[in-house]
Image (cartoon, rainbow, N blue to C red):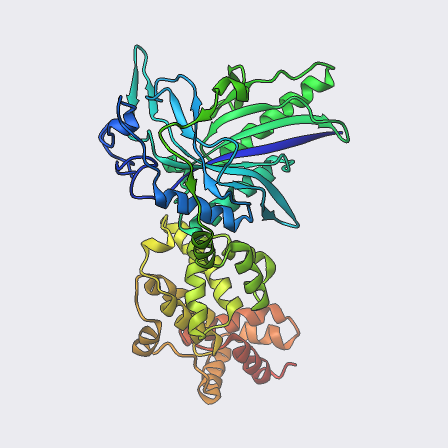
Length: 469
């Protein structure tokens, strides 16, 4: 029996206005190449870097949220390597005193331990053509947090879930958009395979995976590949690999670098920066409710565990639900049901996010409350939802269209009598004990009342009128 041992290195672009060590605008997405650059991020002689305080604050937020140990001072190092899109030929990063050490992220019944997280700058971007390589240095110098886990993950599915949880956390903290599609969240994975109970095997690193699906597929392939090598009695070679989306296979990029290859040494242009305890306490007090805390609160409110988990780790839904819960108009579980089923279904159908609609917590709460109070039927509520999604007030729609439930038993009995007279064969079948025929009668009553009658009440009146029951 073989076991995979997986560690992740997650690169998160911080949502700061300027870059990590200069005043260039950090939001380069969609900008023309090389328009967000200056002497500092281009590595020109004489330029001096200055740490971005907001980037440090964002990094500290993440460290505190994960329960990491924070040092008394911030120390930067140069990580030296030669690559065309690294204009300085070194990267300003951190080495022996990272922004955070230790801590962990809850994942189901256990916690994935965090080894370290540190602040660094990103490299530029290379575009390889047939006869040349083009460089876009807009990204060079952008602030990154690199988060490194301990090798606590044992399946591709767990790796994907961890990344989704980290994404939800940093979005909740407001420090990163963590959008893989825009290159604002990337992952490298370290994976080895061993027989159960044996020492760790030789690990390989798979670089620059830019989607959760790619991480899962790359790991699935690499675990199969290494397992087959071990079954043949051969040894896995340490290497750095890429992942080819089309074939779903990994491929060798270069021999894996060791730490010594980077020749780390202290950044001479940035002296150590003290991290005052008062500042740390202020940041800690300002942390929002974290997703795993939110999940517990939702469960305490009576929301089913599975629903609570999905809502807590989907920041846009959690924000919406929290505002709706504050109104106190509809029950927590009913709101959860509508958000995760009806609203989500409509959004998927239209290819929209919640933020791209005009749906408000007030609008959804009123709609759900009307249904819960029995003032409208489920059918009417679902028919109104698309208009409520466009910002319409459900109470106004119900009032203007006369959509409230027909609760007058006298009026309903008259409709029931008409339907029985119009459908004698179905009525006789019900009298003979064939209750399936009752659905046809019930459906006709609902049509004649425009879906405004309570199905349970109609069913009871039909059975009474037919002398069944």
